Length: 240
Length: 323
Image (cartoon, rainbow over all chains, first blue to last red; front, side, top):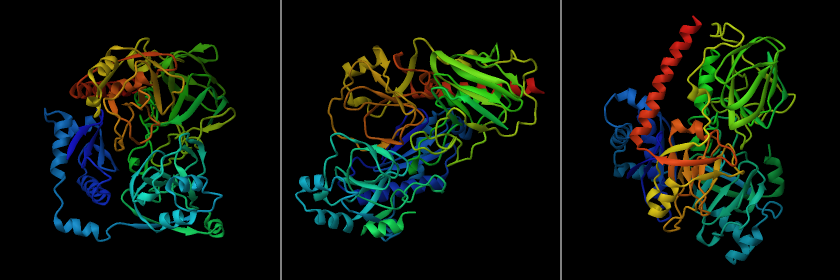
């Protein structure tokens, strides 16, 4: 574990150097540390943000100093408190995390050519047929590795290796909300109209980001995700 | 009562101090790019520091008020007029019903923040009244203001403001109300990927001048100048970024992130502009030139604590003036 400053009002707790070699284990550890820090409510800490291998801790330096008054540097003081909060995981905890303590969310996707603008491109690159791609993509199980880029954009780990397809050389200026894409070894869903370079293979009728709700996103970091292939009719009936 | 937008200007949006607590869902901070300037303007008109105001980019805003209000603004060098009276930065003015407030174009600097007594009464969306222009939510209907908009103002605070004359001489320190500088040097602390750049590149970064590129906005300032090349072009794992973070994409042209920046990034982070200098960065516009200079993390914290202490004193000063 490494604690690194991210400017003067944030720091990053890096838990692993690698992600791809053990995504499940890494995400479980990130989630565990995220929850430990959340529960610890360290004075001066204003928010936490997990992503892949790390948890970022945003803080108010003035409040950190007021809470301890020590001559110690603000950063050192906070790093010490974080270190003492992050106790190693017990074997029991590891088993518990593995044993379905996580949410499982099902996302319906319509893979019709009307939505899957880049199915041909993915087929060409992977040497798989359209139905094979859809079958592989919709039978896998994924984990939310990170949410970012735009509010509610989910980066999902767990894409079957043979589906990996490089991003488009020229990103699209505008991608319709709900579009499901493959970007390198990851898959993800565009929640909002936005630019983007991923290969689009389908679309979900679900609203992934709703600023009027709290929390505002359907998916949360660490969630398990499964896709279900739906027809065009089902897509229409599920569109709110 | 409303403020009527006669002219919205180049880019005017409702902003407060931004969103906290929703980065885990990918929600940006947004908020005034110079939150300190908005806090000072709010204190001057008797508001809570976190009240929503207007962020005005490059000027051109013209407002008509439907009731009496106290206003103050902080930021770049703008000509601001109430009828034919000038309202300098950091001064307060009392407006009567029907009065018009007019922002000319910025002579230099880029943005300013207008506080109106009572604050702007838009709904709170995800913990803030700020407009997220990129994701189109919050603020005034999730967008920048347009000509003809009617912006609802909240009830004015009970206590009387520090202004007694039409334009009061009571003001805040010059650095606070006019942070724009002709040849700014932005102070930074090292980024986590500092050592991924060789000595020559680091020399360039700290000694040479950068120019602000035209494709800069509330998300970030794109900088032209000496190319910053990494020793090895390995892919990095995405992790959090924040306003102030300077990341270097493969083009070698650094980007200094501002309030609307995304929450995560995968480019190497060479440096972070310190919090007390973000207000200076917020004043940079296309073509402006800027230098960077390193400070220690301890110094960055000391400067911030000092400024907050000064603001505490100022807050007391304002309340004494009012009583």
